Structure formats: structure tokens, C-alpha cells
Length: 274
Image (cartoon, rainbow, N blue to C red; front, top):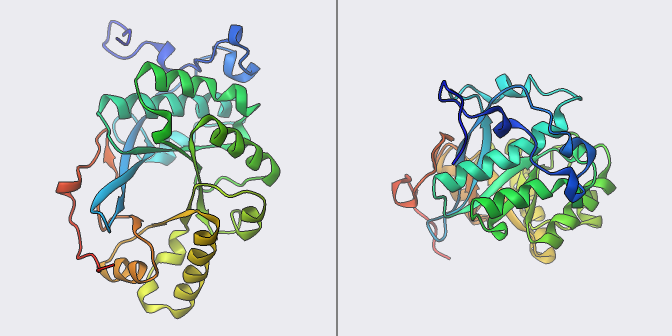
């Protein structure tokens, strides 16, 4: 049970980095220094429309009252980004377990906030064990908008995560920092197509051609493709025509604060026959 202060709020230790120095954690993870602010999560489903199932939920950081992500991210600095990245992993897993989430859990992480992947992952493993959340149901995806300054470093991190048993995903694929050159050196389990490629794809031959080519490459490399930012039934149909069944967006559900979706409660559009 989480220890709480007299005002009913979680004790400060819940917002500290939990990797222990006696187990060889990296200096930033083992410092024990408090993060200094609180946050929570909303969860948005990623659906498999061909099966009408929830493939995963993406954990999206929020304020403790559901405030939007910028209110939290504005407090992340160069000095606390290591502790924030670690605290995010622990909080996302703990909250998902509390919600009895049965799908995969996709956690955004900051590749530039990792000291050594084999050490910085320990608090994640401890949280998964403590809350009985299987590691094979955890996806690590690069955080949206995070410039990956060293592609070789990202590859090293991802390979270590795959070795441990996590799934890996590249977010915003095609948005400049994550492109085909990255796939030449490393093949993640999943790529998430940038939403600018998805917007009005039913009306854009150029977008359809780019996505069709990307799907073909990923099929050859054994990579699953998720289309994010799906907002209309026409976009959904076009994506199915292009061979994509894993979809995320407001068409299915907005992020739900401290809650997860049930497949039978989603507004499923008509799926195309396969």
C-alpha cells in the first residue's frame, strides 16, 4: 500500500526515482532526489480494427487534475529530466495495473535522458514486478517531439530493451527525426506513422503512395504499423485499404484520464472485409 501524508496525498517517495544505488543503478537514477512535482496519466486506446480489439493503451502524461501535458512538461529541465523519465515509467505501470489494464501499455520515453540502458531500466523492471504487469505487454516508444540527437544511441537503447523482452516503437515516423535511415540500422517492433501523413489521407494520392510504400517496407522487415491521429471514418477506410489495421485517434476515443477503454464500448466503424 502506498504510504500517504496526513493530507491524504502520496508520500514524496512516490515521486522519486526508485532504482537503488546498491544494485548498480546509474548515478542520476540512484540519487534518490525528489522530482519536486506531481503528475498523472490519461490512456488512449490503440485499436486493432480487423479484430475489434484493443491492441494497446498509450500512456499520456497529465497534471494531477487532468491538466494537459504542457503544464507538466514545462517543469522538466535538463537537471530533472532523468528523474522525470524514470518516474514516468513507474507511474504509468502502477496506474495501468491499478486499472487492471489487459492490453499492452505503451510508455513514451526520452532517449536523451538515459545514462546506461541496462541500468536505467531497473526501476521499470522493479515496477513491473511489484505490480504484476508482464514486461512483454510493455511498449517503449520515443516521446513525441523529442529530437533523437544520436541515432546510434537510440539503437543501443532499443536493442537492450528488446533483449530484456519489451516491445519497441518509433513515434512520429516520417516527421524528420525518425525516417527510413533509422530502419536501415535498427528494426523496432512497431512504427507509428506521423499524424500529418494520416490527415485527409482518403483525399490525398501522395499520402496514400507514401504510406503504401512504408507499409510494404515494414511488412518485409517484420515491423507492425500504427496510424495515429485517425479522426474520420473515411481516413479509417483508406488506411484499411492500405493494409493498416492498428489505429489510434479521436475516431475511437480521446485519452481517458486515469481510466482505460473497453472494446465493447468503442464506436467501431464498419471494418472492411479481409
